[in-house]
Image (cartoon, rainbow, N blue to C red; front, side, top):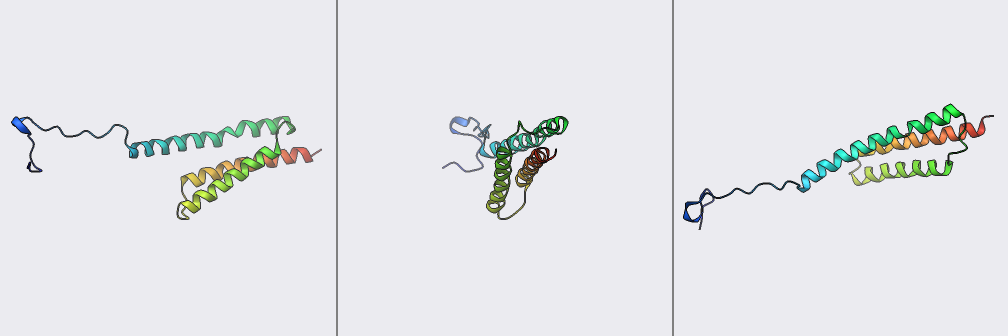
Length: 118
């Protein structure tokens, strides 16, 4: 039996210490977290051109109120789902979904305002 402190194998050759895997689950989760943060942040900013066009043209007829309300509901329910599955703790993923919901809500509000206003 080889003691655990042994640094040589049979014939006196040094034992190789195993290298950690390049792509472990832990690294994958870190990378996934950064990718989620990046793309979700960009997504929050991606609403701005739509908001700008609606205000600039003062016309929302080309935008679907049903679509924006659906996306608002999807973001709100995703935030609630994450909150419940995260032990009712608030985290960055919930904040991003709420920010996306706010942008969808603002877009829906502008659509309604420009359809109601003369």
